[in-house]
Image 1 (cartoon, rainbow, N blue to C red):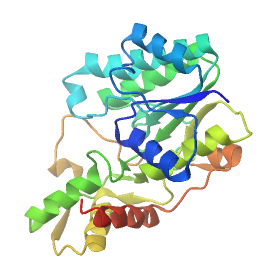
Image 2 (image 1 turned 135 degrees about the vertical axis):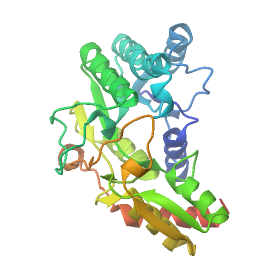
Image 3 (image 1 turned 120 degrees about the vertical axis):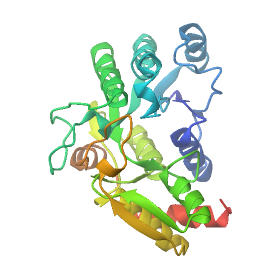
Image 4 (image 1 turned 90 degrees about the vertical axis):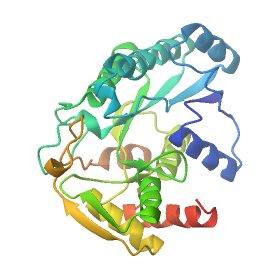
Length: 288
């Protein structure tokens, strides 16, 4: 089938894909070091493609510091748009299919409705805008693309909301958590499994897809579930977004409809709380 090249292998999702592959004993996946797979270094990137001759390329590399992007728009644009286009150009040259990870932040999120792939996009921060521009660059460059938008990603790897809450919960007796931003947490292991399912599926449908876990919650309820599962006795105060101003605005409601990926690729989508329990079990077993 040719190699499956995972770009951004050292990041949260990349490490989750690596774990899924290792646990299942699959072959054919290549996880290059960051120096080999810098999506802004087209010369070295082309060398990597020549060596791997990939059938699929999974792009997990991204600039994801949402607030910092407001101060570094050029860097965010370079990684999220230009880097994505560089991969699309090489995939076109080498006949590879590109699976690219995007975000719910391409939406404004001011309506309470399940967001479909063809709904209007209207980013309200630099990060969301650069990710949308990356989507557009891929679509304009490469027909054989699968763009997967996800949301509120967490896992036992890298920095994320779950690990931040556990760290704060060990030091504090009380926390204020935003209660009026609603979405769906996504366990990166579940997203990794979905990506593998897409690659191994006999279906070859291209375009934009949505994947997060099932269900709906707020950051406050997400935090409460984390502490309840961990046994923390901590006071949580629900607060409005206005009480915790950040440089970048966030969507108020960004729950995505997963019907399309379930229909086209028969992907299983676990409920967010079940997946959180699975992640917490791993974190406890590894003393993280």
